[in-house]
Amino acid sequence: MTLTLHAMQRSANCYKVRLALAHLGQDFVLKDVDIRRGDTRTPEFLALNPRGRVPVLQLDDGTVLIESNAILLFLGEGTRFVPEDKIARARMMQWMFFEQNSHHPSIGEARFWMTLIPGGRELKRDLIDDWMEQAEGALARMQDQLTRHPFIAGDSFTLADIALYANTHLAAEADLNLQAFPAVFDWIGRIAAMPGHVDMDWRPAG
Ligand SMILES: N[C@@H](CCC(=O)N[C@@H](CS)C(=O)NCC(=O)O)C(=O)O
Image (cartoon, rainbow, N blue to C red; front, side):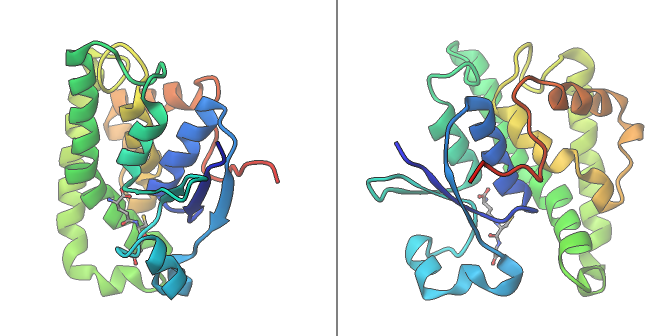
């Protein structure tokens, strides 16, 4: 099966998908989309994803998948990254929902506007303090969990670790200090040391 990933290199939502594909050893074609250049607003891109967002995963039969965590589940089902046990699986999903409803909207938004958009700090000045406060709350929840478990959903490395690693390891880009969350800091090191890990700059050969 040929997979085509439409993605922006510095987007954490896109990095999650590249990281999962790398862990799975799955070949794919990478098509660069730069949202700052307006690439997600072209008629061609909107025909692919009318929401105008990356990542987008395209299968060779033309099927288009959107939403980074839905894409992770599509890729990860039936592999060691998704627990078979129903409760463990629900815990993994719980943290993936947390990533989308609490973590990304605070850490991800703050980092996006503070580092990726020229003048973003000024443009979003009214929102940044709130995002930072919510981000600290999200990191505190992770700290609590990771004090008791080696991985975010429990004892094994799952898609939830991949989903949460993407923005968390970039927290400094949102002026957040991970040293204040030592269990999260240690977890970052553990995830980066997993066999098959690739960093955000990694691209598939060719
Ligand atoms: N919940 C979506 C969020 C996707 C998203 O917001 N992607 C951003 C990049 S991280 C984007 O494409 N933004 C383009 C835009 O808003 O125009 C996911 O997880 O895939």
